[in-house]
Amino acid sequence: MPVTRAPATTEPGGGPGGDAVRLPQPPAPPRLPLWPLALMFGMVPVWWLAGAFYLGWPLLGALLFALLFIRGRVPLPPAAGIWLLFLTIVVVSATQLQTPASLLTFALRLAFYLTALVVGVYVYAVTRERPDQVAVLVPLCAFWFALVALGWLGVLAPRFALTTPVEVLLPGGVANTPFIQDMVHLTTAEYSARSLNPIYRPAAPFAYTNNYGSAYAMTLPCVVAFTMLRKRGVLRWALLASLPLSLAPAFLTLNRAMFLSLGAGLAVLGVRAALRGNVRVAASIVGVVVTGGLVTLFIPVTQLIGNRVESSDTNTDRLSLYVEVIRRVRESPWLGYGAPVNVDTVSAEAPIGTQGQLWMVLFSHGVPALLCFLAWFVAAALICARASSAAGQWLAVVPVVCLVQIPFYGMANQNLAVAFFAVAFAMALTERERAARLHRPRLPRPEAVPA
Image (cartoon, rainbow, N blue to C red):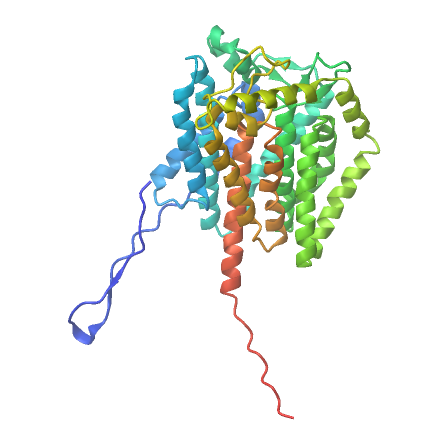
């Protein structure tokens, strides 16, 4: 993607009147279309039914990159350099891979990291050049509707499973790999037979219910922001109606980190609203909290979570994995091990370097990569916090939600692209708000009347 500079103005040495001669302006680059984002985020049920939701996601990201490359002169969002440094370290860490078989999973995770950046650049560019910025959020709203609809499918048909076309087309040795099988074999809910009191927890369109809870917590602020930006219309009322409907599948995931991250995001939002005296934001927080509280009258989520914790060893398993990561990363702190590994030194079934993005990055790519990963979200949180509008303040909590989730949930999946989508839109929205404030005409002060 070529980088261009603003045209210079030259003044000739002599000429009639000494007038300055301006060089011709280059033609404006073509406007980026919204349909690729709609194809990627708005057709999630189709990709899920085809078994291509995971493996096809980087291909959709490649489509966005091709359009950006053809367009040229694409602005990078703030803090993009931090993520580029992270990607560089990840690529170099491939030298630490212990087996050729781990190269496939490494490449897939790297593809998700790259796709997230491409989505962020595309959304940032298309939001800055469109007069109607709110239209850019429509694909993410469609993603939200997919979460709600498929979440309810997991509630009503938790045992539903289906062999997908992608699963049939893949070679048997690849399709039967547990990591790939989870991605291409269609299920609506996750069921843990290891639990003493196992229940079905909604997961679709994801393979794991934790990913569903992570996506829900990231997307909810974006939906509220859209309803604040768009004052009328069928889509606005459909989103408002979907908010209470979404709580049942979200609560039944029993994802503690989802509740924790949303609670932290709402707390930060509430403090900012109080400091700025924003009544509209405060009222919206009260509305969300009250709606959630009413749902708990029908779904005893606290009791269900308590029963799940008492009847499972998830906390012990996670701690054993975390301790093993810290112990082993001392032997390779700079580049890690390239990917998670299976060992017999822990009681958990998951490989070392899973059960949380923080631990995956630390173990797989080393301490510098983890610092870059965290630094990008911290920078995004600080940049988005400058938003002045109610919608911008809601969007600004997305990186806060992500920071709380990083120790508990993996993000080397579609959710990272969701986070970059929301953050890039918030950055562009904040820039436009700041520009509007700077160019707003100031009323002259009234002159003092002498006594």
